[in-house]
Length: 136
Image 1: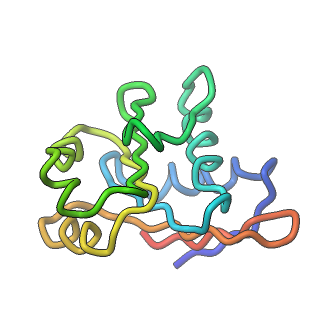
Image 2: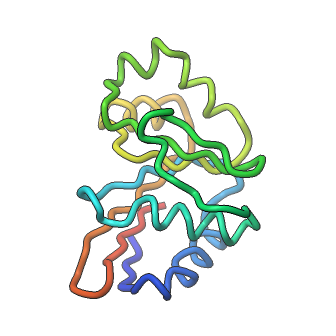
C-alpha cells in the first residue's frame, strides 16, 4: 500500500502515481465518507487525460463516461444484486479505467474472483489536505 498526503492543488502527484502504476484496464474502488474527495480525484484524473468540462458525480445517472477510456460510477443507492440485474457489470468489459464510488464488498469480491484487476483508493480528510491510501 502506498500512502500520500496531498492538498487539492497537489492531486497531480496522485494522478501521476496512478498513471504509472495502474494497468490500462482496471477497476478502481474509491472509498471515503461523503465529501471525502472521491469525485474531486476523478476530476483530476479526467483533466490529466484531456477531458474538457467538469467531471461530476453520476449520483442519479449511475455512470458517466469521460472520453473513451474513463468511466465513473456512483453506486450509493444500488445493491450488488440490482447492479448485476441492470447489466451494469458488462460495462467493465470496456477498455479503460472504471472509477467506482460506493462499490459494495460483494461487488469487490465478485470482480476479484472473476479475474479483473481491482485497485482501492481510500480517501480521508485531514485538515487542509487528504490522505490517500492506494492499494494496487
